[in-house]
Image 1 (cartoon, rainbow, N blue to C red):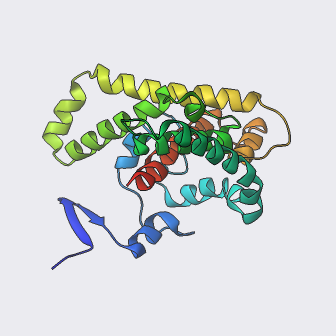
Image 2: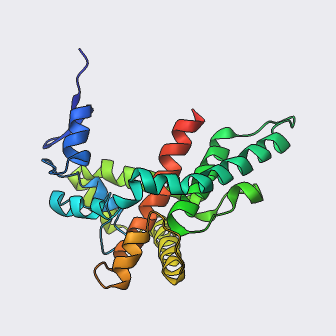
Amino acid sequence: MASDVFRVGPNELSFASVQAYKDVYASRSPLIPKSEFYDMLGSGFSEACLATERDPKIAVQKRGLFLPALSKKALLEQEVIIQRCIDGFLEKLDKLGGGPNGLDMTKWYMMLSFDIAGEMAYGETFGCVESETSNPWLDIIFTHLYSVTNLDNLRRIPLIFKLARMVPNKWTDGVRKRITGFAREKTRRRLEKSGDRRDFLSVVVDKVRLGKVEEEEMAAHCSIIAFVATFSTSTHGGN
């Protein structure tokens, strides 16, 4: 008989239900903390972001930074930007889609969603669709997820995990440094921007400038926005 609960370790359960999702992620008063996976996902930053923060109360506060950007009014203001990105995407499909080899639509959905994330969060496109080419940050996101997932699996075998942590791993360290480097550079550029245009990071930017939020936390938010834009929209759209 199928179950919504799976034991993945001696003291760890995995839940696959709508109610569990609400209790852990969507509740205004979360009842259950997130797993240690999120420590590893955000390990390159000294501050946690809205997705990697494991303290339920602090996580609610960090999610609150983005609520204004998710209001109906704010999203409608972004509609013209999204439409422009989609129009450019359709033009490229019309131009390139009739070739003998076709197009890898999963890759193109990734590039589209990455460009939209750039416009809506950082105030500038990554230009993937226009240049018909991916972006180094986009290319390394799935590599980062792969390494984090492997470490999370090893965590459930304490002896092997301890031995693995003792061995220097230039590959995983290099991936993490590149991920954090991209996010910190994008944070710096976003903080240098001025003007009246509002986006997903506007409230965070305001609070960083007022000294109420650390710049490192903003970098962590930048990183997870790029990750979510790539992983969720592109993979669902490409299936």
